[in-house]
Every structure is written in C-alpha cells, then in structure tokens.
Length: 432
Image (tube, rainbow, N blue to C red; front, side, top):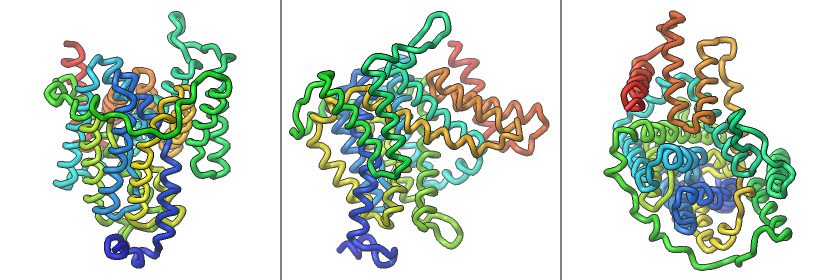
C-alpha cells in the first residue's frame, strides 16, 4: 500500500528512511507547538485552543502535502506572520482576533485561486529579488524585536524611543542562555536544537521556582473558543486590504522558496529544473491556511526545516505523513506547552530571526537602486511594527528610485501597479 501511494522505489527510498526523516523534520520544527500559542494568546485568544489549532492545522496541511502532492514537506503556522497577526493587526491596528482570522482565511482563498489559475509563477517571477530578500530579512528583524521585548532586554524609553532593560534579572539571563544553547546546538548540527533550548530554559526556571510543573500528559484542551470564530465580514473592511495582501504575499514567497529550496536539496526537480506537481503543493498550502483559520490559528505555511528530513533521506510524502502523525500525538502534551514561559520561547524567535536575516547577503550591494529598497523594506518592518508597512514602503522606494535613476527597464507592470496601489493607500486610506 505504501509503495502504491508514495512510489518509494521510484524515489530510491525505503519505509525506514522515510520514518526517520519524518522524525527528524518534526524535531526541528516542534517548537512551533509552544511558540505559536504563546504569541497568539497575547491577542486574547485561548492558549489551549490555539495549541490544539496549531497541532491540527499542521497535521492537516502536512497530510495533504504528503498524500496529494507526495512531497516530504511539512507545514505549520508560520513564524513572522503569527507575530504580524498578534502585534500589528490586533495589537497596533486594533482589529479583533476574529477579524484577523477572517483576513487569514481570505488570503488563503486568494492563494488557492492563484494556484488554480496558475498566476503564481507570473507573480513570483515579477517581484525583484532585492525586495524578496528584504522582506525575509525584515520579518526576521521583526521577530528579533519581539523576542527582545518579550524577554525584557529591550524596553520603551520616552527619551530615545527604545532602551536597554534590566539584563541582570533571571528572565533575561535565561533568555540569553537559551539563545546561546540553541545556536551552539545548531552549529553542532544536533537535531531538535531549538526545542532542546526551549525545554532547557523551562527546566532551569522550574528548578528556580519560576514556573510550576503541571503534569506531562492530559486530554487535549477544548477547541471551542477559537473554532469557526473567524469574522469574514469584518475582514472585508477597506483598511484590511494591505493586511490581506501581506498575509498572501509573504505566504506565497515563503512557500515557493521553501518548496524550491527543499526540492533542490532532495534532487526532486525535473530535468528542466522545475518542480513537478507544484500546483498541488501550493494548493496544499492554501487549503492548510484556510483550515487553520477556521480552527483558530494564523497562516499555515511550508517549513524550510523540512530540509532537515530531506537531508536525512526523506524523498516522498510518507515523510510528511510521519510528521503529521507526530503533531497529532502532541495534542496530549498540552500541560508542558502551558508552563513554558515567554522568556523560554523568545530565544527561538531570535534564532529564527538570525536565519531569516541571512538573505541580505544575496542583495546586490554594489547597485544602490537594488540595495536601498531592500534595506528600507527590512528596517521598516520592525520600526513600524508591521510587515505590511515594510512591504508597502519597499515597493514604493524601489519604483521611485528606479524611475528617477532612469532605470525604467528594471520595472515591470506588476511592480509599478503594486507601488501605485500602496501610494494611494497611504494617501487616502491612512489619512482617513
């Protein structure tokens, strides 16, 4: 049956390899089951319900990817977009988390349509590489700021806007220790280093009496507080256009980049360098996003950590199925998730930020018309506390600099259109 479903022999793999690869992938991304509820619960969402939604959304998306697209790619609520959901859309812009879930669902539906009508390649190919690198790095900087804020390292300061917090307290020291441990384990290529770091900080905090042990296994919390609570009508507000666009845009490039990168690592590209069944893979992602929004979590996307399992030998959807089953098993571990403090998950955020910022090395620094928009995009996300603002200002900067520099040939209709739309948004919508 497994051979018929996943064509193991044709991909040069075995059941044993696929199972080990699935376990490897899961261990590298398991941190999301505690980090995501921690971030989204800051909006007022029920922690236990978000924990269940996170596990179920990851399992559903990964199962679809495994069975339908037959790729060893795992999905889960994406880092960066969950922070944008919580701290910008709900925190800064003042929308309810129900409306934010509605925006996530709409973005997933638009992603689904783009995949069906095969518009995705045109969109992806038309966006300048410098802006793509800037967006990725900006999301990383955004996560870094949140991590430092949650751990008390960075605090608000009326005179200088931000300042250094109290670094000698136990929370800050544990945050720094967790970050160092995660980086060291990553350097040594130890599988599950991020999760080990989170659990290590929690263990030390428990020994110091800073958190209380509440058990290991329990029945899953109720999903009722978030299940089907999305507000689609509220998400159709004109002011949510940029939010929906940001959710869609980041998910589109994050997923596409992950799929191509993972396929290259596993030798899954065809003789023309293209990814077979790309449409199915992208539709798996979009369906996962819509399902996740209905369950009660932010955008679900493909995880680059899947390359860990591919490096361990995973080549088919069986790897993804193993990951999905492990996410379902985690539904019984809610007591552990609920005792992990913010200063234990913050090191994971900062570590992910480091990985995402690495894309800046690919920017053409010798060409100021490419470098400047990338930097503007990356800096505006944390400094305005909004991924959407960073994307908007990046596109506007890119288009204007190219026009004034006489580099019209570098622009294409999609970039010009997007830049104009964002300019009109700032003039009319933000001024209203």
